[in-house]
Image 1: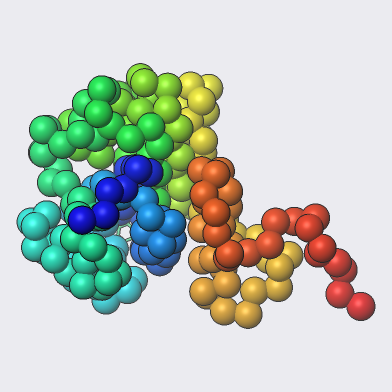
Image 2: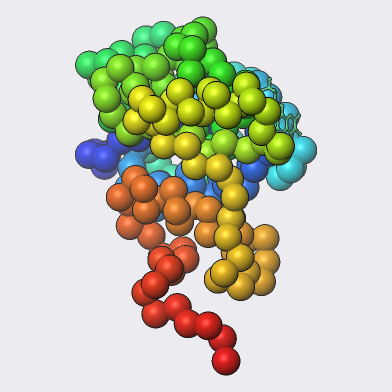
Length: 209
Ligand SMILES: Cc1cc2nc3c(=O)[nH]c(=O)nc-3n(C[C@H](O)[C@H](O)[C@H](O)COP(=O)(O)O)c2cc1C
């Protein structure tokens, strides 16, 4: 059985942008990360609505479907239940040092900003903040209210990276996949994870003739 040295926590919450979360998971698995995946109830609704992927509420059943979907080794992907308080991600001594919430709802931003720790996603984020690891929130909402902006400001001051799901157009995307790849590439850049998705700006980009 393969041992995975690189570990990361990925949470999918109920903001629009399921394709970002799916692509990010695909890339992390391809880079041989062991991924602790946390899925909120609203994220399951969004996944079904936007991608037609219906995941059951039970983590074991969801795990089975996702392992089949991504064709990964069973133990490379760990799907945690929302009250799985014994999961490594719930503990400062065991949790991966990096966590991404992608997509991240305004509701999860608020809960994380106030340290609610009322479900495993909130607790895992709280642990990464208190352990001074790297937490990245790929927030999606529009427009932002003052509440959203204040919560994001608060988190940013604590060192959390607020990365709105706002793909650029300067790489002349031809498809939705290009837009998704752009966003996921930026996330992977911040995590320091290798990828072959989109060129960084300034590395051979030119104004078209
Ligand atoms: C199809 C769909 C799309 C949604 N899009 C967003 C969104 O883009 N941003 C957001 O903050 N909430 C969005 N919501 C609302 C959240 O899912 C809702 O606030 C939920 O309570 C978030 O819970 P969670 O953070 O535990 O996943 C959406 C809900 C649905 C069903």
